Image 1 (cartoon, helix red, strand yellow):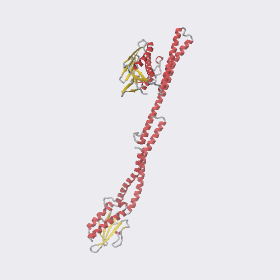
Image 2: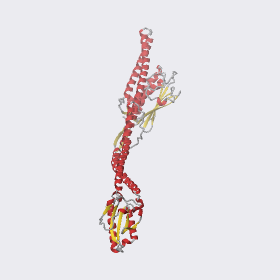
Image 3: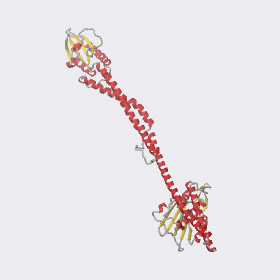
Image 4: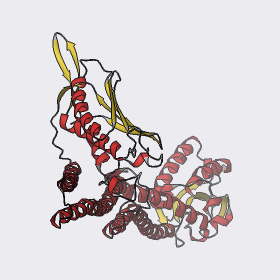
Length: 504
């Protein structure tokens, strides 16, 4: 619930609730006072006006009764002698907590219940006392007197007496005053608790949560239900999103620091090997160990190869830095698949031939198949995968073989690079594209490397809108698969619409 809605509800409730409780309390207190004065014996009902303002209500009631009696006297001058008529009037005024008493001279002629009249009967004035209207007795009763003559000439007085004493009103006011104070206090406490639980408690929980964030604890979860709607729910959800982002950022930072440490360690190892070799062979040349031209040329060739290895490693690390900052310089153009991969195979084939590795190439796409790609970066992908295969062929008998196949898959092409090397363990396949991951923990000089080659390959393929995966069997070889979307032209209203499937 929105906080503004809660404030509106509170504003309405702070008026409505006390009114409802006050009305209920009034009826409860009135009932209690009526019961205390034993007025329930007169009627089973509850008359609001007689309890709240007995004088005014009694006056209105007696005016009505007096008018009815006056009309009855016109029809029958001696109707007040008829006890059945008196009983009907008595039952009528009973709803107003009142009763009739009729005197004949000094004797009581009619009263329904003498117990009700005993407190007031001695206070009633006699016939012809000239009491007009309503008067109070010493016992705080309200009385209306009507004088008349019996048919025998005897003096008669009819008294309409209120069973409610005027002291009841004062008690009611006192009780209601106390009740209203308690009602206002109760309403204030309830609404304060509601607002507190809805606003202040969540704010306190957020403060505690933010303290945990400040202390670096990103695993602290708010104990309150974050599905709540409104501003508080939004704050909870924003906190949770922030916590997860900060946690992810912190974990990424830790991972990056770990990777950087591992990278430094790998670089140190991978640079140390060729530097040691260069230093050793150059020292051999200086000291005259290579004492003939053939041996000297061999040392120089080894030094050159090791320098090239160092240069390749530095280039790879430079590219890794560009990947890490998403700043690979792409130059996307349309490429004919057959022509482009044919040129790549020619370059790779010459190098593999020098290493006595057989290369098989097949292109099953149509001659006009095109892709949109960066030729340099795709060539880097091919070279990285092939060099990785060469590194792990582990065959000195001249039977090493690499197969490169280009397959047509309707709206894309699939490139497969398969070798017959030692293969990769199934447990390692899901991780080979991770940065710095290497299946050879020993890091011997023959199979050294920074462990970022395949992560670079994956990044380049994904930036081309494709995807890459590997299949392998230990002792049989490994096959790298990657897919690139085709370039397609659609003819629409004699206009050519070019659709590029690259993602950059």
